[in-house]
Length: 163
Image (cartoon, rainbow, N blue to C red; front, top):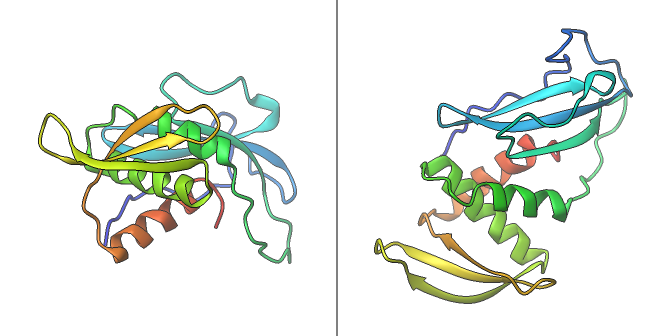
């Protein structure tokens, strides 16, 4: 199983140190630090935009007491943004994350499978086409088994706050 060691939502503003109250809106940022994906939360009133090098960012809302979990809304644009920002990632965690995001985008019909091939380095790659723009992308296939894909997908959902 793949372990990304990414913090769950902290419910504490990284800039002010203030606890985020139930029902309060916040901004979350995903960055890469020393080869690891790191999530940081910010209170809306101190948000000045994403820091340089952010892989993704989104607005969320802290759950209220007794609030039942609901099925997450999948934000295709956020998935596309993560996919694009991880384009040049060379570490296995980033490549695994990008591969699973590509699979999710195919499942959501935002990407269409075009072909499977080998790149210049001899790695297996998927070639996908964006349904709307027609842009073609090459995605390294990290050869994950079903269990590993499920683990990475759960991590994608957790990191993006969709669990």
